[in-house]
Length: 589
Image 1 (cartoon, rainbow, N blue to C red):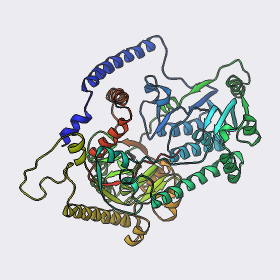
Image 2 (image 1 turned 120 degrees about the horizontal axis):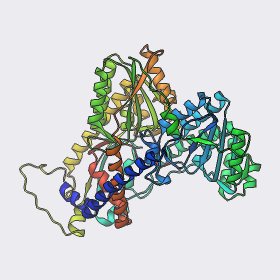
Image 3 (image 1 turned 45 degrees about the vertical axis):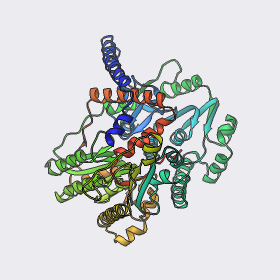
Image 4 (image 1 turned 135 degrees about the vertical axis):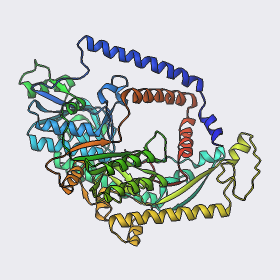
């Protein structure tokens, strides 16, 4: 059956091969172009001189870490430019203490980032302003909500004379596929534990359940409340007033309204703002500003050297048992075990940004992390935008768990999902199968047959056992009775503020806070350096893979039209383990 789906999902092979050849040729042409630029003395990076300004161009997607932000941006459109959160935070911190940097300029171009990542960036900007005494200027034409949240920390914040600000509060949009699956003859067979375990709802319901609606309402209201408080601290706009303006559809208001209500400091055209920035830096409008990107700023920082190393291990994406997507549990476990045995590693910080995934893979990573503790090395977890379900499973055994107020976590629950495509194959595609077997369940699981009562009961038993194991890991790691864990489990997702209150996390703090805690616990706070694992792919492999895959996906989307989204859902379902600790993707807008 998997072979059949490989054939279905592997269509357009000829196009793919052509695209791959074209992409490889394009790559070497681009590389030659870079070499030509270098020969002409045109460096792709800027040098930091006196009176430079760190520029945060928010027209990007923020990922946990990247190794080639600025180089990659040459080959892709601004809308898809990616930059590492690690680079942004490192650059802001470095700029704070660099006398050559006069201030920071935030250009509002539509950032795409998780709520916790936004919180971390904003906190870093606030620390920069308060501790360095340097300026932060911000400007935008049509300023989106995430941009506004970051830029509201600025000393001087301007919008285009006929621009807008789009503040509307938070919303979560959830697509439901049941009617589509019914039309094509696919039934999703679900077994689960947890009233709030909602990852399966899009496949078996046509609208959100009351339990799922409750958990979403709770955490998005808490997140929005925190964001409103942050805006109040910078702009002096009381949360009740901000909500009142938000309900009035701010993006339809004139700029005079925005200035009068202190949402911004003023309105002007871009060239006028540029002159203001020049005056702030040079005292005149004739000298151009030397802008430094986060990548250039971070690249200038010297690497630390010490025999005492704190290892930062990144666990980003969905957890799989193997493969190249998300977290490869086998590879990550091996990396962790090597660090546990490395005498130069004094402690480990696990940076988690994951909705979970394979229950089996989560257990393997959990067990490997216990070896770090058994080796006498302190272990801390730093949670990013999300560390839920399997993401919490791998976190719960740490000595100390750090999260941000806007982190999504918890979701302690388990489910199993097996699609039955009998109607699709027989009635829609005209494919029939005959089965010859030696035992009652020789073919199980089979995508063209429904589960029997006995098979479903066995599946439920396995899900129940996995849930009990998950709960026991949490109870042991958090030193909380299992019955108490179950009261806050049931698959429920919690925001960071609530998670701290109920004991799922220990304290608020970023990655740096977790590193400092581990260094102190290891007794090396005065002399340590950091290393990052797993090792990222080299540029050539990473570039070719990303570039070719994106071209393939673009072509598939063009050819398949509205069926492209369904194709992706089927692809993900087929790649997943049958027993999952997984939280649904949460897109907060």
